[in-house]
Amino acid sequence: MRSNTLSDPADATERLARRRASAKLGWLVHVIVYLLVNTLLVTLSLSSGRGWAVFPLLGWGVGLAVHGAVVFITTGGAGIYDRMVQAERKRVARQPGAGS
Image (cartoon, rainbow, N blue to C red; front, side, top):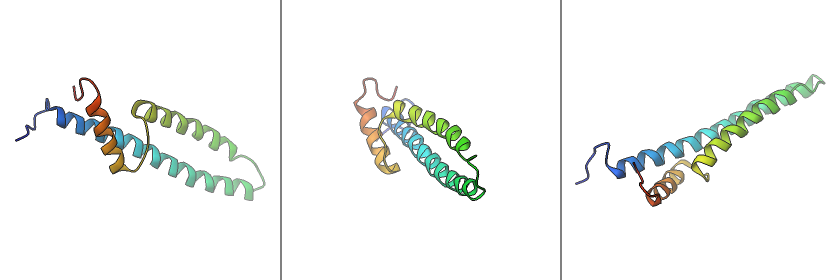
């Protein structure tokens, strides 16, 4: 029977895999909200005959890029949540000292 203590490497691997997958999924949600909100802003900007929508696009785009860089540099890859969790389990299990 497997122990459920905090020092159990399998539990630590699972937590790390889920945390990494959640970070990737969080970035995906960020992208979707960015696209939806900025589509609305561009539409409003164009309908008013002005080009003000470029400012939120660029400002938020920088934040989105930084968020993506942090998530994908620290965790690597992308995909749907369950595939991400599985991939992270494998990745963490291969690392020396996994789960510590």
